[in-house]
Image 1 (cartoon, rainbow, N blue to C red):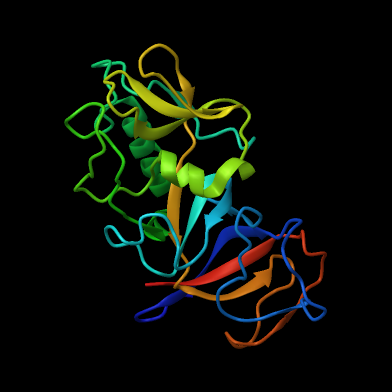
Image 2 (image 1 turned 120 degrees about the vertical axis):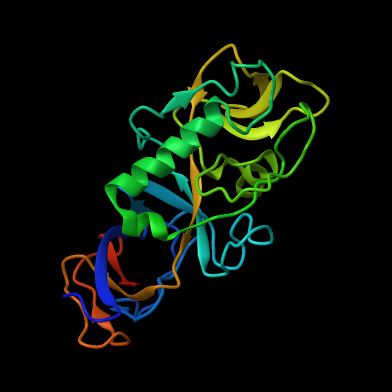
Length: 253
């Protein structure tokens, strides 16, 4: 029901609490408000795709650059998700053959993914926080620079990948956004040996997007089949095992 100023909207966001999430004896009672997050374990189905939380609130990537809110978590597309149709792989930059990121193939793929999310659900798109990207070559190949525009969907940098380590394997090699310092035509990607530099215009590699999802509008977290509480702060009796889907209910202004 749409109210005069606000409506409560239940979006199809699914939290999967997988192995590694600490659970107490009374974990069956799901409290109102934002969900408990286990970095590199908690999974969220957002915009029709499965993502892994790789940074929790207060430590989301880019939180000190741009407008990323302290209630944001950083999501990385899950291994085996399959990616967004039309944007699952790309060259880094075959147009100029340099490791400049803005406006070329990898960048364009990220912009396309953001547009797809908005086309599918404008409400879900509004939950994504923008940020400024560092560790990119903007106008000088082979150097670390910072973009001045807000970006909403983006590849990890080499240092951001280093922060999550090898916990997030992938089915194939995938691009990072960082240029190889001192060289114009190589950028970093992640392969089965970790991060390594590869030519930007020789091979298409996987596009693995990340984004910052703002949880400040979450009123309560409920089991997707257990219904909603009568008040936002009421506890819910979990009806399934901890691996069952949970639903986030948010304010939609």
